Amino acid sequence: MRLFNTLTRREEPFAPADGKTVRMYTCGLTVYARGHIGNFRTFVALDVLRRALEFEGYAIRQVRNYTDVDDRTIAESLKARKPLREHTQQFVEAFERDAAALGLEPVEYAPRATDHIAAMAGMIQALERNGHTYTTDGSIYYKISTFPEYGKLARLDHAGIKSGARVDSDKYEKDDARDFVLWKAIKPGEPSWEAGLPPGRPGWHIECSAMAAELLGELPIDLHGGGIDLIFPHHENEIAQAEGATNRQFSRFWVHVEHLMIEIEAEELPSSEKMSKSLGNVYNLEDVAAQGFRPSTLRYVYLNTHYRKQLKFSWSVMAQAEEALKRLTDFLARLDALPAGDANPATAARLDEASAAFADHIRTDLNTAAALGVMFELVRALNSAIDAGELPAGDAASVRDTFERFDRVLGILSLRRAEEARPPVPVEDIERLIHERRAARASRNFAEADRIRKDLDSRGILLEDTTAGTRWKRK
Image (cartoon, rainbow, N blue to C red; front, side, top):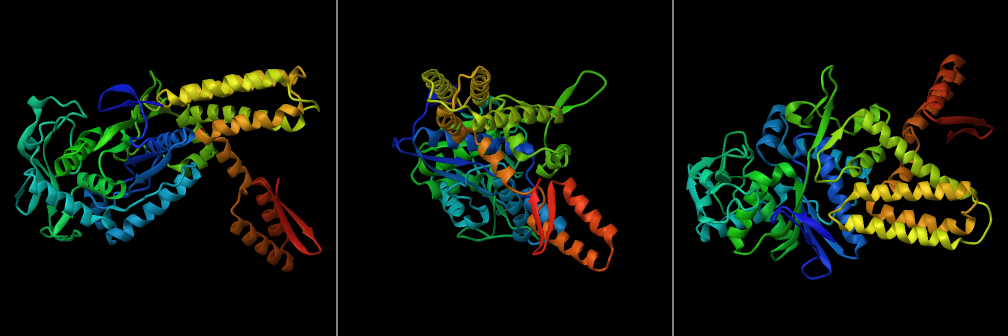
């Protein structure tokens, strides 16, 4: 496996330090709002990285956190007039539903920042002992002049670093390298903790450094991932905190995923812009469903562009992805009707060649777009073999096994199968409508009963009336 390491700006061989278990930290959602499909581009890319590492035979210990205390979560909870925990919980639950819908594998640790305040306080105290902090007006700041390597991840120009000038905001501009806040003094109406420090709350950046060190053990960890927008200030500050507190390297590898861009329809030349809650141009999975697409189609769109290239999203791109997925599933369905016959040695050779090419692309900085290309070239060749009568039933199992191995990394075919297995209407809604239809028929309101039957039929559910009652099944 070779990965592009943001720290060194080059592709390097990757293996866990102990040769067995990959200890990886991936920045999760800041739960002040529901995650959008731009956020999930990063989460799916890092899920595929996890799967690829498992495919290589490594065990995984992964942390993907929830940032449930920062400037934005507090502001939104105050606006909603709800306690911070209650307000953020709804977005934690929404993320978990969306992650499952997109086929993300469960991670070993999914901590909420507010459950690890003690670890953050402990890291801040270690930074104090090592001479990296100062206190002003009750807040504790990181003095970046005490860490000569500050800026090594983002490749900052040291002439532009303004040590001694403070920044209290969790997020700030890329050219605004100043002393940043570790612990914020208590403010009226805001949640606060003590944990051996003056009453207050953590700054955003300390949260991930502390949780990574607490949950993954002795530094360095093997890999840290996130969106490209986190390189500065967030990941730069994470390095300064973790390394300043422990005098050890924080992470050996850094992996960053590019933005998802929204294609803007216009009479003049088409353009695109980054999907962002601040720009108000966000789509979530409900918007995807409203356009008639399933999460498996979106997952395919993510994988059809290399993770380090900007992804241009549009509904026409989704339609093309749906057609591509249909070609895959239609081909696999053809295997059920192959003519009798023993396995063809030419098929085995073709499968071996495709498997080697697929693995090479995945091992070359997770090139999922090229790996998908291998799959479709194999589909084209095997469809031609079926048409020519050269793919007998004896080859079906090995062909299916090959595509299942591909899907262990990509996770699109298994996701589509799971979607197909679920009824297009929630079971509780079907049962409720059957009950309402029974009541309508009992009151001789046959028009309403017929409307309910037709409504379910239009949504892919057939009703069958029997002496034992009404049964339903998928069309």
